[in-house]
Each structure stands twice: as structure tokens, then as C-alpha cells.
Image 1 (cartoon, rainbow, N blue to C red):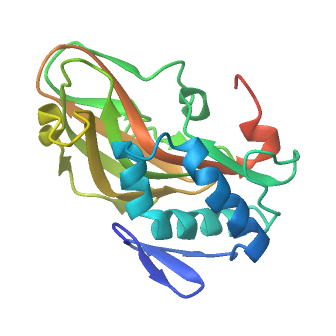
Image 2: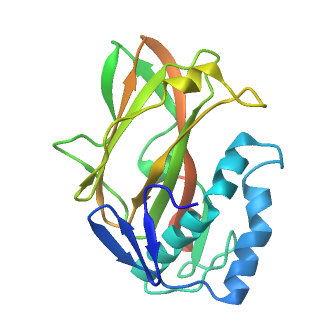
Length: 218
């Protein structure tokens, strides 16, 4: 299911942005499919169900990043320094030490970069984001507003995350797919209805060169 992007042959369209794709080989696709279950939890995980439902979009986004990284070989979780790997998005990938958010006042807060001083994605990595989840016992996330490159998404209300309205009773919310290409400028703002603490993690994958993904700190 393609949500937030349009897949057209060897390109994907992300709003007004168009990215070329370097298709996975049969061998590379086998690696991806074999590792998918291990990377994204057990079979009844709500996060895994969301990722599986949007797997075609995730693969297309991965192939766009692969093209941007000069079509280096995709080796899953075992890439050499100049090969392409993937994994869950870690706080360190985005210049953070953890996913905790301190909410001093209700309203909008900058989560990644700012509207006037956006975050620049590292040249060796890209990200495909399809949602957010909260680890808080009392989730406070209300909405997500993103600007990626020249493309600004309308604010997406995710207050339903508080209801944990799913079989596993976890706080997850899907959003239209965000494609953060290497070197792109990105700003993401989050809205909270209450003060206090939350722990908000993006749901998606990091795709990049082994020399970047294998670092513990940045």
C-alpha cells in the first residue's frame, strides 16, 4: 500500500519531489525479506503489521536511497563500510540521545530541526518514516507536522494514539510516508495537549552505508 508517495516504475513521487530508484536484485530482496521479521518484532506486533502493510512503499524508498548512494550493494544488517545496510531508526541517527520529550507547555514543539533552521540528514543515510509510537503510560502526542526538502505535509492529527485502540493495546499512530533522503533538510514539529514527559519514537527504517549505520555514537 502506497501512502504519502506515488510509485511510478523507476521513480517515486513524494509530493513535488521525484526520486529515481535503483531496484533491488533478486539476491538483495531475499536478504530484505529474510531479515524483516527479525528486525521488526514478533508476528503479532502492531508496528510490524504497519510496516508489512506498507512494505512496497518502504522498499521503493529504500531503492531511492540506494540510487542516491550510487547503487551500492544492499547487504541488510551485515554491510561493509561502503555497502548499504538498514535497521530500525535509532535516536543517534537523528542527533538525539534518546526519544524522550519534555513538554513545558501544551502546543507545538520542534522535534527535528526547526522551520527556520532545519536538520540536515547525513550524506550516508536516508530514512523512511510511516508513523510514531509512544512508550509513555499516558501518551500526550496530538499531531505531527513535517517539512522535508521542498515538501510540506499538512499537520496530521494522531490523538487516537492515546486510545491504544488495537489488539495489543500499544500507542501507535500511522502517518503518510515521509522520505528523508541523504543530505535533505528536514523539520518535524510535534503537538502535545498536555505538559509532562513523553517518549516518542518514529516507526520506520534507516537505510545507509555501513560506515554510518555501524557507529554507536555520532
